Amino acid sequence: MKQPVPGVLEKYWEKEGALNKEFNWAVGEVSMCPDTELANNIVIAVKTGASEASEKIPTLMQTSLRCAKNVFFFSDLEQDIGPYHLHDVLADISPEVKKQDGAFEFYRLQQEAWGRDGNVSSMKGMKDPKSPNDLAAWTLDKYKNTHILEKVWEFAPDKEWYIVIDADTYVVWSNLLHWLPSLDSAKNMFLGSVAFIGSTGFAHGGSGTVFSRSLMYDYAVTHNGTAARLDSKIHNSCCGDVMVSEALKEYGNDLINIQPEFSGQKPGTIPYYTDYWCQPSLTMHHYNAEDMKAFHQFESGRENKSIPLTWAEIFGRLVRDQLQSMPAMQEDWDNYSSVVDVGSGILYEGVKRSTTQNFEECAATCEANSECVQYAFDGEACYWGKAIRLGERMMPKDGKRWRSGWNQTRILDWISKQPRCDIVKFPDWRESTHY
Image (tube, rainbow, N blue to C red; front, top):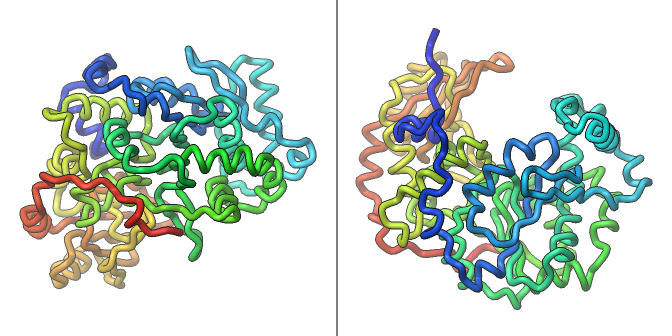
């Protein structure tokens, strides 16, 4: 039986000899937590759910948010997890709205389970009755975003910056403190990573979203009651982050796109290319608890922490060795050559699809195109592209079995031609695209 290939951060754990050992939370903690006026004026709102919170919140606070001064947790159940209090942000939604969406039956049953058992383990995996492929908790989740903005202002009004993230978002705190002073909290500023539904751009919640004090006042005070007004409309929307973007747009506020610094990816799925290289990393997404620990270990072990952390450094320290050790054909692995937009909103020219008979023909197709650095075959079609992605395990599903390969010679050649990133430029909101 073949051994599974570990993910990027699992591999780093192994390399550092830290896997399955007690994690040293204190590494670099004092030196990486400056007590500044800016740090005291940043509020972090974490969106989570009772079914995941106990697995994610403690680790998030001991790694990515270890230096954050003002953190509030918003969930679908009022509870305490160790020293962390989670607020039920759905409590004030009207009974009429709760009756119109079956997802609130999950909410009601979860409240009962908590009162009866003191835990919600019996609720894990429950499906949405109207959409059997979706978890009920995920359907419920979209009602949280609009209420979080009102609640976090109520709990911590008049701070300079409010940042809303998911429980699996990793914030690079040192880079955030470097970047925020270039902004103006007295202006209405709404910043994040654009994603699209059709042609409509919105701020992708998992990448993290930044709201200035002025904008929060406009939403939570001037337009107080926005969340309640939108509750009845959320039933027909896909996502809570879309609803927030639409509301702010209605009030005259564009999304300022901060990409690729705000990313919906993690190191193994990031498409490394010219616009994912010397730019500083501000956020990443889809981190589980072990990923959080490993990345914190990596951050703490950097030789020069005064230099902003870039995508190039993340690639060089976490991805490159594993990528170069991959075999000519990695079975049950998707390197995302098929994906033009991996949830990031950045479109890459050169991602192509062609029909071939087998993996060998797919490799030959890549070889024949000078810009191709990697390729993947799903049993039916061949995909190739010019952005470098390691990817991740992908077991056979729906009749497809992924096989991936990389043109290591071209990858090394491309890397050798990239700048050293001696000068790291943080994003200038005045030069960013507005949506």
